[in-house]
Image (cartoon, rainbow, N blue to C red):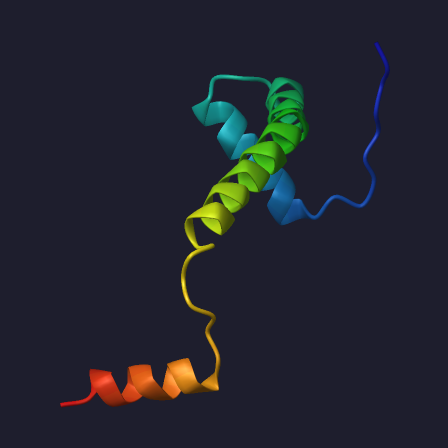
Length: 81
C-alpha cells in the first residue's frame, strides 16, 4: 500500500474530520480512507444513475409542446385570476 501525505490542510477541516472519526469510532486515517473510498467509489455510479434519469425524463417529455415565448405568455395569462 502507498503512503499519502497531505500538506496545508486547513485546521478547521482537520478538526471536522477528527470529530467525524470520533463519532464513527474510527481513527483519523480510517475515516479519511472511508471518505476517499466513498467519494471516489460513488462517482461513476452516480453519473450513470443521473444520465439514466435524464434519459427517462427526456423520453417522458418528448410529447410535450415546446416552451417558447407564446407558451409562456399563455401560461401567465391563464394562471392569473
